[in-house]
Amino acid sequence: MTPYIVLSTVLFVIGAVTVLVRRGAIVVFMGIELMLNAANLAFVTFARQHGDLSGQVIAFFVMVVAAAEVVVGLAIIVALFRARRTVSVDDENLLRH
Amino acid sequence: MTPDLASGAMSSAEMILFWVVAPIAVISASALIFARRAVTAAVCLVATMVCLAVLYVALDAPFLAMAQVVVYTGAVMMLFVFVLMLVGVDVSDSARETIRGQRMATIVFGIGLVAVFGGAIFRAVLPAPVGIRQEQSGNNPEHVASMIFADYPFTLELVGVLLIAAALGAVVMTHRTRLTPRRTQRERSKERVRSSQVTPYPAPGVYAGRNATDVPAVDAEGRAIETSVPDAIRARGQARQLTGIAHLEIESAEPPEPDPDAPSRAPEPDPDIPDIPDPDLPDVPDVPDPQVPDPPDPPDPEDAEEGSAT
Image (cartoon, rainbow over all chains, first blue to last red; front, side):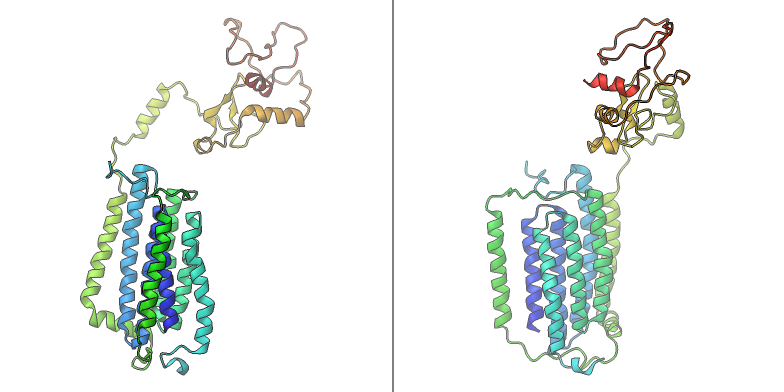
């Protein structure tokens, strides 16, 4: 089971680094999705490790929550783009000044 | 149900599958960090999610594998691509660091995260893997469904509320309030009649020697009508100047001998209006006088435009 957990870790770290490095809000959002997927992989792996289907059920709920999150997040990105004509996270600095 | 997968340990076939799929997943996931264009990152993320779906099948979770393909690659990532289309496909990150040392700090953070997780994974003492099928016989979707509806009914209700709230939230976020009253067709038609141009606007390429969309139309005096080129082409800076095209035409093809019977395309001078030299057209050849018995070549619109630009 360890290879699956290692893969899950690697994908999670890639997602986290994406969130921290990239400037475009959409790619940052994709990094969040990748982190959620990595967590799902860990859930499914441990479901098999322990012979308990609860892990798969929780992964299913994570999927649904991620879908809802994507809907709202992309709506925010579209609204931001309409207001500021940019999706770069560096340019959204209205609260700073 | 294959009996060799009954125990939880990874069989050698599963090992081969894992080592084929996992590198693809990791490589395409790293495109999120390194791809310059957001569309590339989105497509690579789709590949990662399909790889994860394959691994879910290997992990005895066929229902989640199907849900992964349908929900993530089918719905979520397509939504991403649609939003990329709205926002602009060409949007690419600048490689410039806005916070000094951020990239270095991120690398250190990533290595630290790997170290923490790796330490936790390899120090953990896991019992022998049980495997799903020892206690759960029958098909996986049925068991997952019975668990969802029997053991987690309240979570299911909460998730339903969350989905409705998300749908409403998306509608509210993207709703645009109309600031000005809607212009009716009647008002538009009245405005059009009062404006200077009642007839349809010229299409691009009229009398310009070419009828491509990026070539402006030529008016009666040989000047380019910039508004005849569609706005999108002008905004992208792809509208052509008429002069370059006129040069090409002259170089490529000898202008045909004018037919004296053919109607002249040049504007006839109005005898009532005195000939006012146009400052925009310094080198326009003289319009032939109708009284001259042997008229010279009628000025071609392209020639006139060429003269106006030089």
